[in-house]
Image (cartoon, rainbow, N blue to C red; front, side):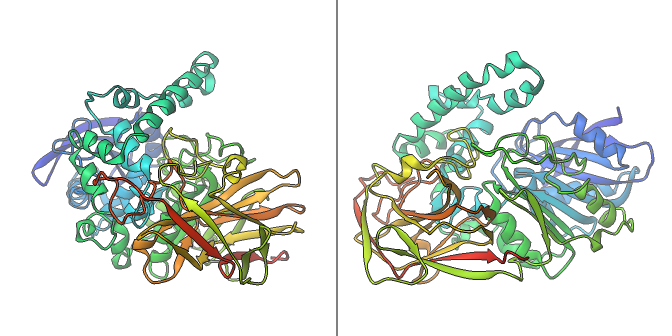
Length: 559
């Protein structure tokens, strides 16, 4: 094992618990990972050290031996700056640092880069996004419930006086799933653990959301603060929402994401914000937030991801389409090795169901043919707009159940699932295209609604589905918009971006509705914040006109 040093680094009046693993050859560049999780880092550190880097693991403020109080994102810029200062002052350091991490450590990497420290030469943020791209809010104004409530309960709560909170605090589903790969007896325990976790989460989220906010506020005051500020333009987010500051950043970045990850919108948006300045690389796999070792719902992608020591993906493997993409990135921009990284494709995207990678240089793809379909009479997706409309009633007390999608925690599994239960509901409009000869959709997917509502504020949802010849409908991507937070008068629903092959004989389907619970918090239709303001919801009558548009990024068959 490499030499290990346990230190406490002074940062803005506190000391942060840090472990350093050192290579034999020194001075050495460093890879810094800052995390709020109690992770066993020895194996990952050994792989990093084997590549000639010092591996620096640090518990963020208020977590696992680090001083202070934890509040997501609040101190990451200044604490990262002080930590990098400490690293470059050490005799084993060559003065260069790379920042890496998946999920929250990925967001910490972005914030560390925004500290502006000159020793930070490259970053590798994976499966991450800022506040309104999944880290609390699914989209502006729309809380993602497993991020607002379940993530802090499972990972941040230190005490509980409620049995459901205690069940989730003790949750060991992920740890057991990873440990059970080579242990059949342990694997057999998973169904009971999953059932207990899911039941506790469902009981919690069935309570009035303002009650749940108050319950957590006693232990985690920042939960109420996050719930009480749904507007991305609110000054409250100025120092927390890193995405708004990316245009001022100039650092070589390799972005890693998954089509069914909660943060996929953020991954693509961050890449777009960074493009055109320093070198950038984007790799999108088909997986969920939990990586390549977990099935994508009812679908298991037929690919094997390769190990990448500097990806720092503690769930298992890298999402890279080639060997050691992150390590090669750090070798080039932190170590300064001339390894030809700049000659590799800027973007690598896995085309789902086609089982192949598409390599390109720009997003969206330059060969994209933007194609518009319209809801039409008889539940048809038509090429021409119509003059009629369809109506449904949205009752926030009986929201549409989520089936698949970009979940993070155990309340529902993420990924691809059968949509039959959802599509039988009267409050879900369903429109289906004719059978295709095969079509690839790669890029951002958008719905622009011509619609009215009887409510003072409401939500509209959209979901793109793949209908197989036997009639089975499965989700491809989805989105939601809250009218109070739309930037203009257009009702525009930004679905998760995707790359997907609709095979010959398959059809495209569009679902339209106003809720997806428990993925997102139902809108009470009152214009008031249900997460902090207890009140009764009202029912809304929603009318969708056939002049509405589904805008698809179609890739020509010969490209």
